[in-house]
Image (cartoon, rainbow over all chains, first blue to last red; front, side, top):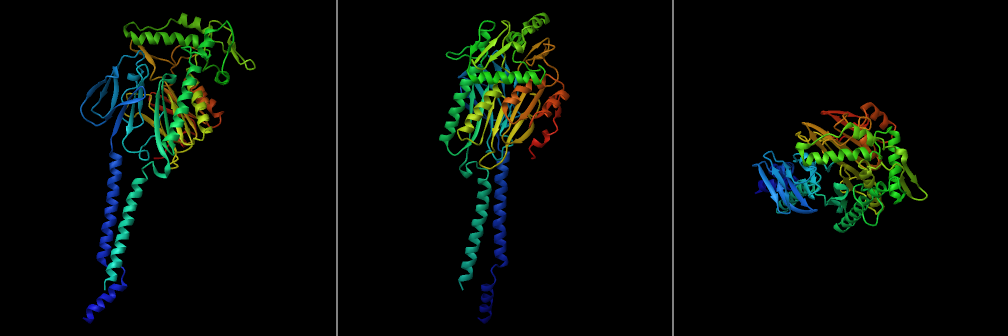
Length: 140
Length: 359
């Protein structure tokens, strides 16, 4: 009995025992790893293409590295968009006279954009992660 | 006997709380809503025949809508003023001045007069490498380019003779401004103004000034390649990061450089968007005033300046002169830097690298 009391007395004075330290360590580890997972999720998050017709959003296309696909929308039937396997999008065909939209080429990076003025169509690539993680606010 | 366990439990709980707030903080750092400053973005397709992007940090949706309204109104108004293809009801614009060439002076908004005075200044300091009175020549190229794109099999070059005849009507001294009367007169009936170089940057700066006067302090307006940054990103105090577009549109990397800036204008002009093809050779829209043919010095030039007026006034001229002359020109101007690209090679002014984002 006396010995047990002694042990407890000791316990009163020591703030942490090795097992507590272990628990604390585990909690910190859990915190750190969940932070890293969060961070990685943010960085590896995809981009998506927003297609606007007369400043109204008509389509959102995730730019995943998938299959090649051609798309036409009823609001702007004169334009064919192409989604490429490398996770990019481009104006493939357009009824416009100047073809500036087609000349703009492929877009894949957040902040990138191209427009077809005669058809009043804009494509913007948007990062799914928010601003702080984004490399570029705007491409000039 | 229970106390130590109680203390331990509390301390572990506290640590747990600490760790979780640590995580929460690290996550919310990436949330622009922090600090009551929200990030908004809006695009305007149409005015100035281009795309305008407005990016701003505001306290709430209502104040962003106020900014958006201001920008939209100004874009429409300045578009009507600087339009040189179409007339707009109730307003005398550049087209009106061109229509009245050799006939009469046109009373215009003082904005047009200030703008044309800047054009004269730009023509002067660049020894004619950019000339607002170059419309007669540029309109020929515009015509053949449009025809060539619509009908690629019949695409053709303008004759040197036609170009030289048109070039007889490009004397900027025949652009007569009467500040007191508020009128502009083209004293040569064969002459016309083309404000494709300079008007977008000029409008961008005026819109910026009005937005700043209305109390907005953290935003970027990009008017078709004319980017004007105001303040820093107010949620984080970080500088704006503006990507410089690669003139090689087929290249993997769309962005050549990332500039880290506050309160600056970044204007890029290039030969990569507007062109047409004749016999497999590309002919773009920047026309050299001496050869009257597309300029061959560079693929693109990006100019960084304290304001968008100056930057847009000079980028065309920089595309029309050798590197050394451009560097010399910019060295004489306060706070101006530039990046030139030719066949993937980069050339810069001495202070340009200081603007690069460090990460």
